[in-house]
Image 1 (spheres, helix red, strand yellow):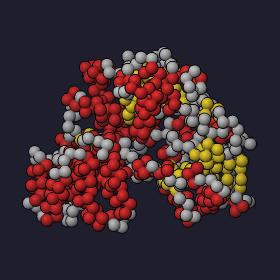
Image 2 (cartoon, one colour):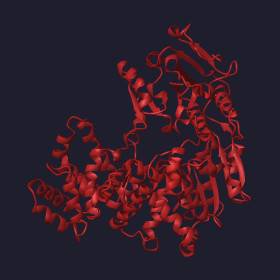
Image 3 (tube, one colour):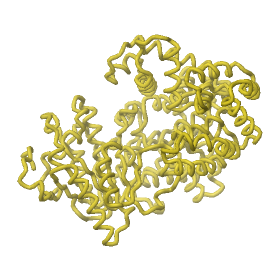
Image 4 (cartoon, helix red, strand yellow):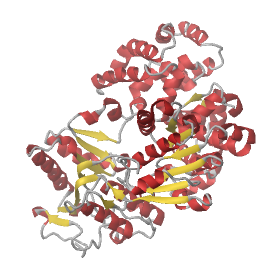
Length: 632
């Protein structure tokens, strides 16, 4: 037996057959299994460079490579692990001529939205849908591999489909003219080229013997198209949990797991069901939740830790009482010697967490909110990155518009006109010379660019120079919006940039997967309560977890009631949240927040709870109130 693996994990890690799907329940050690699988492949003769591991986060990719290298040393040199986007971006850069993407510039969602606005304005048709609506439809269509018309229908948007198609075509033409690649292009271009061009397909496939994919339940149809072209003779080894598929709104398709054996004939299916995170009483509740589903998830979590505390369901009169109790309970536990960071509060959305935030602030309880702003998506950092983007590609009109509008009396129309001029020039120096001839404010922009350009090409040096030169201007812009904190972020970005040799390489890596402020600052080292959205909580765990707002109309959400598929995704969202708890799970709900919709009552996940599955505690203020559900 391989050290540290249970029989099910070892069976998966040493699988000798063809393609394989590993159904790994929550807390069953899937990362350990993937690492053992990679180590086994290398140890039994597969060269490390011929193994490709695809994950959904840069952090997971880094962890896999580091742990395999620690275990095997030089044998693991050349092992590749990356996100889907980073893997495809490597191919686009390496074979830019073949894919037609040489010297292309990657743009992020904020840029995409800005470009759609520009294109919409240029068409001079006020009847066109708003840019934000079209961006959503366009991205969904590409990730789910459907037409714009079908995407509009599935997104339930009441728009002129022909107008949306016109706007999307104009956007694609502008991207082509500017040499831009948006996130969806990165995967779409590679998948499409592999499908239609046998030479490119063979060029890529002959480099891969083993293709491992983590978090398969989060993959979308576009990503499946990519994997489908890369397999054979390469073996697929996909690990995921159908019960944790919760990103349907982003295009994730649970059928990539449910239909795996139909799509890949002869594939084996293995299961990991031994849970190392939670006690059995907590798992009994999550198992019961899945048992009520019409989908057969065909696995049951078993706790290796044995018995513990039952989940608690506490009922309050109002959400105000509910939030105050959570804060009071946290304080009481802290006074009893528990660390703040041993506690997690899981909420449906940032908006849904405001009541809890209010209570935590009132009690002066330290907390971190996870699920919010990404560092390189924050406005002040993007302002400075605009300069780096121009140093890397002076034809980046979106970067010009962002930079120019920082200066007085330069609005969107003027900025766009200047940017359209600059994209026709041969070099950045020509653009700088043009700026010197313009108004005083733009002459200042010329000085900024000239000073930064003279700093060389090292990303960290260029960023530091740009941040220092722009600091007076940005302080005025953000002086009433946490400037002191924003200013500290620049040092963090400079440190990230120092790990890269080229500006384009630095920008691309962190645009493909922006880092959260909590990741960058390593907030896990702080003693603070984690307030986290459920969709940000996968991969996390804490000894004590609170789930406030467990009301009808929220679990499942009332907006999901029109669709069985969406109700089932809501069930999986609830399951993900429940399985974060190691020792204690505390569910809370309030009478006044109950939905008046009969459908919400009928679909409520916590109706008909079996006796003894949870401990129910009714707050004094809620006693004698009119609970509308006989099961309570």
